[in-house]
Length: 447
Ligand code: GLN
Image (cartoon, rainbow, N blue to C red; front, top):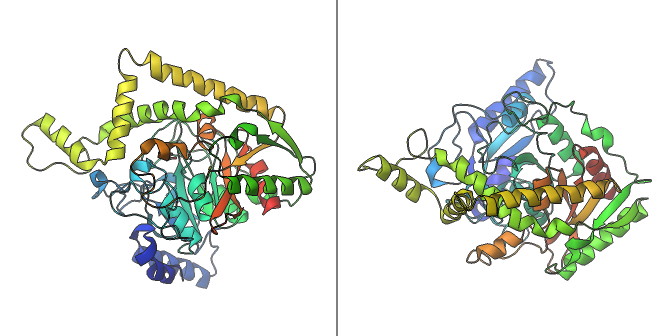
């Protein structure tokens, strides 16, 4: 059924960079055989899943939507996809994304643009736009994305589905192509909170192959799906209701907060005064890390190599000039600049200090409440092409999601209504470190 839906919708949506139909059918047949033999099947047996194309899949092309990795076939499997395979999930394809996950609309993909299923003239959000559109349109049941500054939550909001960025370190990044290593996390997209809880349970947990992964027992997240919020304290981040917020988004989020109160939660206004420095700090820290991470694409070890280089330097420079798109080059240049001698203290070090202050705002908030709420994005899905000429306007879209990555906290976006044009609106829930349980409880009660 998923493959039929893909066949019907891909000519319009372009959610997938590759559809792995043969692979999917073989995996599904394996599940059938297990059932026929009376064997135990995995928790996700037969569930069609889409995988963002920055997750390494052994023997299956993994491009990061970049020319430089256009022919890259990973010799190993990422931990998350390995776990999914072991649980019996059926991968139907690799989903489109912004090149190296740098963007907020899936328009920086070197290969194609993905349409928003609710209005195909609009973007699905990004960078995990393909994963979000595919789930929203029923091309797969669930999918995986990655979130460095909002890339799961913002497309989930734009496509009207559930998206979760876990606590930094809860899910192994082994086999995730690195963008900004101190911010990147892999997480689930789903149509229901319950599906997201099941999928997170399947991918979370300590992994010796990722030195930043946390040694923690993974609970069964479905036990937290309780439709009652009595005694819960929910903080509303005042600063996220300021300038630039679309009034229809504000109204829908306010109404959702009212509903949380009706469900028994105590609503408390919370101030996070440093929230507004998020974008500025992020666009120093993330490009810095990206400039270091992307240094490996030199035409020597893997990926594409320029034709007929004259010498080594020529090979490096032409490989990178031809292989990277404009947004990726912009990030590499910013990162290299702010890390260079003489500028490091003024920019990089300063941004790290701001990051610490932002963390303290959250710590202070979580001494008073269990969960924080805000809009996920200041607007609903914008039209394709609207922001491509102005990178700064694109950067502003992640205003509300970026602080959560800088602090390493879990964040979720759940649908909370529609604007006047029938476009979905997202409510962001933010939890304290490793308090995904709280997010699931509040999200489930609301849903
Ligand atoms: N839109 C942000 C950026 O371009 C966040 C992307 C992400 O989370 N991967 O960096």
